[in-house]
Image 1: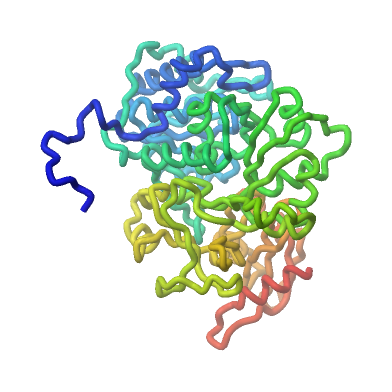
Image 2: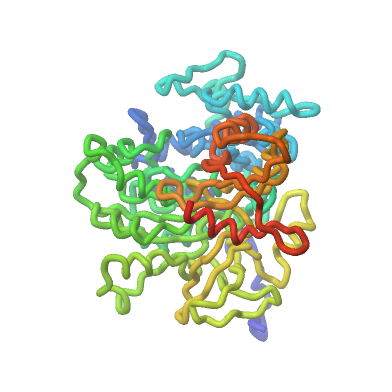
Length: 542
């Protein structure tokens, strides 16, 4: 099917077939836009000529350290130029990029180092102690630490490791990039907490990264030379693939290390930022900013927002301030955004206020690079598109991960029936637009970070006074959702909220720590299973 009767001599060759990869975008940009501004960080300015040269020297420097094709190179970096450069320099030497969340605790970072098998890790000076402790906890050799200085932020080099700039100086400026021979080759490894406390390694291929980056240009209706502010951490789904996207349109990346209202407003006013992505907490930060932190700007800023669905009230307040917000939805397993609330001007332009915001809060329809997004039952049957019947969001297409690293059982389960099972519960409206009604299992999304309730409960259960613990999401105006812990104490034992929160903070990253704790008997089924749905409802009113 699809083949002509006589295709003699019509075969793939170097002239007519090249594996898709986002690396091509920067190579092209260095040629087409050599003097255009590519990367901004404070007073630092890099043209595309400079950007490509530094990525080339990074690739060469890593190769000189013994990094080979298929090896893993990790990062512990905030949104700084080195993080953007790693997205090209690491795969340009044939390696796989493992961008690690800088907010994780030592044990989790150590697990990722060991499970992923990183040979080298690029570490911001502010996180050297974390990296060193994680390497020490590994059985056997851990990754070599390369230190990225941040003196302007109070984090000079420790002097204990080879510096990033020294590594680049070792690099050959004419190093030949290692381009993929097959677009199925891996480009990135990202760890997500998923629905359990043990992180799973999500593997991306070059084809998916390319198509996601290119497809979002269409979804965002981008023209040439946008100015993009990196609010989405580059360790979250590789910054939603936006760093790979910018060279394709000759755009400028403005690095934002510290996400504050003042820094965002300053970047918009001073650098002319036209686009950024972020969780609803970013929108709330701007809405609630004090007058002293605000700046006047004369253009509309396009915003992709995702995470916990933003409250209609938030959307209603942010747009009059000069921001045009589009709700998107995705997961680490689908390279970041996979759906968009594509605006239908014929049906919705007359809506305003809460009615307009309620439509914009939907997760929407598949982006151009996704084959299908729908909502199905456990039996893989399409739910009625009535806006009321619940099912699970299912996704299929080139923008879906290769699978979970070293975890074939989880991969097979996730892909059962020919779709990726998101685990997110939603309804589907008559026009096909998807709208989430509940998060996957018991995952809490706080400020865009995934928090596993199972992991938090496991820590709470180690408290000497705790008999049972259940953790659910509580809606929060600032963070979207925060962990709320319900605890049954052992007979005769005592504890208070502050004590329990302090206990968990010693064992978990700050964003995973419960923000509220209450005590009492937990509701259970006849078989003893805790009724979390009841606790979620209770948390909303407390």
